[in-house]
Length: 435
Image: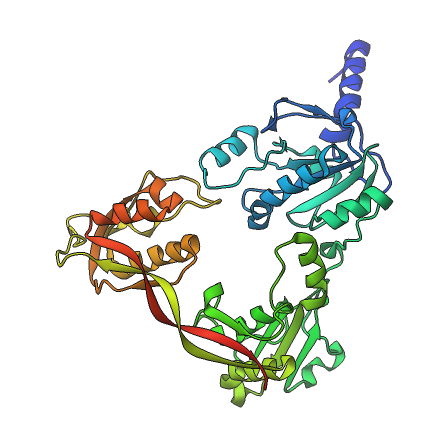
């Protein structure tokens, strides 16, 4: 194809205008200035676009997130708090690859989700190319002149203060230098290892695969409570994951509990995370969880055991002897199975107006409903109905998503069921100071 001089000039001008972003702009290096650009497709802002040269803050933070990133969504309230705390000194802009319409629908369909009062740069490709990251959330730090300084996995008030005063956050980006190791022993002698157990202070940049399977257990960068949960859960045989399933009877609980304040939590994790690894001979493999329990007690000076403890529970009961759940077996089970009876979450593609189970085992309903009770009401769930067999049930989707107790109780009345609070005995993992 032949071009005239005029056509050549036009195409050259177009390429010069879009090349930095449309044709593979290289990642920005530390100390380089962000090219002047206009961020379009803004969501949750009074303006439709932002020109970066118009930002007058001392610190610009791009927060890269995605709808499927749970840690990103949990951090939204903190982002709002930090923006309010530092005011005009900082500007936080959330960046995601999803379209403006998709982002809007994501929040509109999830009223239960906290939406920060911050601008969202949607449908982005340019900023993600300029600041590539190995996972979300990720934060790119720039000064008021658009000079790029660093990226981080976390965002804290201390880091912002450090940056504003000395252009350093004091935070590590462990993703960029993460190493995967099978153990902390010399790899040259790995095949000679027959049995071992060790506990070390966490090395955040090291991910330990360690001895797993029938002969061993490994856990990297874990809190003391997480280590005990792993030892007592026995790969799903038991469940001590909920907060009410562990009780501390200790003089100093500070080494067990992560502070709520993000600044304190960041410092706490540097001092209170551990890596544990265990390998046993094949003939002793069945004892691996008991061995881990004893190891942890010895290492941390703890006396641990499972006990029956009284707790306030949410109990599902029948209000009559009528079986209003009995299944109409003319309905096909596959048409209204478990996928039709779910609580809406951040990854839910289609939010159903009704949540239904037809000709499905009662235990399926009890398991799903009990999980929602514990998630939203933060108390143990007990099913005292005595129901068995297959059932039909249909509940309002919005009521389930809100999960307000009075609304739930009213919805259950249709089936002569009620959800009431009672004192019950439950299995609790108790940790005491060693005597």
